[in-house]
Amino acid sequence: MFGFALKRLFGVAVTLIVAAAIIFFLLDILPGDPARFMLGINATEDAVAALRVELGLDQSAFNRFFGWGAGVIQGDLGISFSQRMPVSQLMSERLQVSLPLALSALTLSTLIGLPMGIVAAQNRGKFGDSFTMTLAQIGIAIPNFWFAMLLVLAFAVTWRIFPPGGFVPWSENPLVAAKSLVLPAIALALPQAAILARVMRTALVDVIQADFIRTAMAKGLTKKQAIWRHGVRNALLPVLTIMGLQFAFLIAGTIIVENVFYLPGLGRLIFSAISARDLIVVRSAILVLVAMVIVVMFLVDLAYAFIDPRIRTGGQSIGN
Image (cartoon, rainbow, N blue to C red; front, side, top):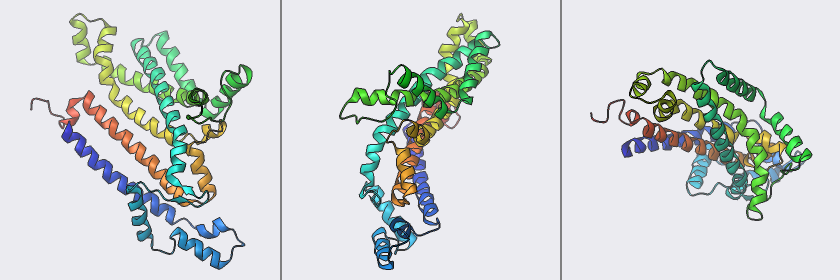
């Protein structure tokens, strides 16, 4: 297991380096002069030239890339030129919203989606299967921003159980901060739960037909016991892949829901930085998002190896 993890860590490092290079140079070749854009069309040439020096735009692209990379390794993501604040500080403030929101949504979607898929597989071809998969299809079809607005109308405007939007910092009132994330988390989680339910059902239906399930039932286990003891674990591999991809979507794709609920998250930070042509914020924020996704997929790989030892042994049995 340790050797398997080391190999995957090496892959993570290479992927991060390649991703950083792609992010930097793709943003670097965008048309237009960031200094001119930030100062406006009425700025003097001297002012533009001074800002270009401050931004490091007078240096070659490779020098700027290695300088930025060295800073990232040391934890220095640079200074936002639109807000005049360290990018790391801006992102730490926004991640206090986006990260708990994404983790809450992922947890909620897992708690809803996996049992739905298991119930549907157990009742394959019956009413429970059709009913569950119909709900899942509806969940996939409904846009999360529209569902978010329905939640606001129902639970914030009509019943006033949860706040309609905004966010109170965790340090001021943790309870109010948590309540502010309930509706956004539900809006993000339900469509993802529907996807998980369908994937779990499909994977488990295939596993139920396997020989080892019939063997377990022949030894005296009921169908339900065989599914829960032996089937679910073997059906989790494709589900873990979907969960890893869902986390990537949740952490990077919350910009619409954050705008619906006026949450000061990472998505809104990137959007405002793009509008202000603050490339250092855009570059660093995207890199952090990519790094988080890569780390999550690394954890998914480790979970694969834990669930199925053949993965870490190259497809061979443990005894070989």
